[in-house]
Length: 420
Image (cartoon, rainbow, N blue to C red):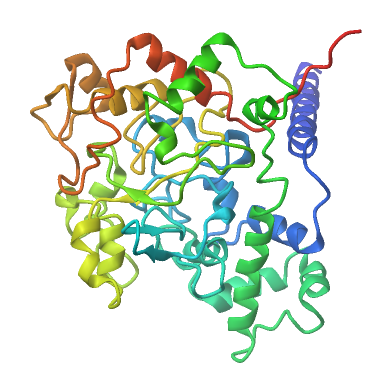
């Protein structure tokens, strides 16, 4: 009898938990269009081999559309793929507001690459006219992510899904075409559908306390307002993360911040993990260095000449939802490799990178670096931005104020009604 009572109690708690999650996702969301609804189904479906990994596995709405696993966030920050022993090399960026990124291009006046998706920009948007759509299709066939064997394998799973009818409603009769002549078109439609969902008001809510403040329906605390002033001034954050109404809080450019290597990055051990063809995932092992944008440019004949001057640069991420997490104790990983474990430490790095001694061990963890009062050398020592960070002269209180402002950028803020 006691066992049945416990099981029933757990079931009730589980049901209420599911109801809470559903309510939290729909409270602020507008009705989705059929294409957005299709994209949502695809986003949350385990289209992988084995079939336990979805887009949402690494891009959870509960933590700002990025990695939701606290154990992983505390260490390497890089998520395992459908084959659990396989890891990629970078932490998942936020899927929210990524749809606002323009098609990848070179600004000859600013001498900067702008747009695209992924940390290195390789989802340029040139294939489908939309970087978010190009990006959505990448993980499906990546052996260290969703590990599907082919476009055909993906299309077959979609054609047998419980939303297959919706696919044909959106893309027309006969669009569920996994034949040799139809599979490419259907695969592209999958990417475009996911991009439509990522562009929806459910994902890009613009519903933070900061947004409410800009609309005049909420007030920032004294510390938050001070943090905003610093963000736009002394801390120089807005140079790359422009503020304002409906701003994505990124300029979609690329930068080498001088971030150290993350010694816990599981990709360093991928020289011992083999792909199906017998080749190691990361032949370089611990000698591997992330080339970022420069590595992608090396693969593009039209931009190869600019690869060296862009080595080590990574996409400037949106700061929306940067502090969103499951409770105050929930760890999040920051920077492309997850080196930093909280907002305070990455703000402190921006502030002090160039005024502290260099740690003797280039693989020093963030925790040890803070205790030793040093920062390890940059993973990529060239092209480091020394104009907008490194020696900002912020006090400890000013760092805290910037963090306080960053925590106003999480979507889902509820405006308090004034009591008459």
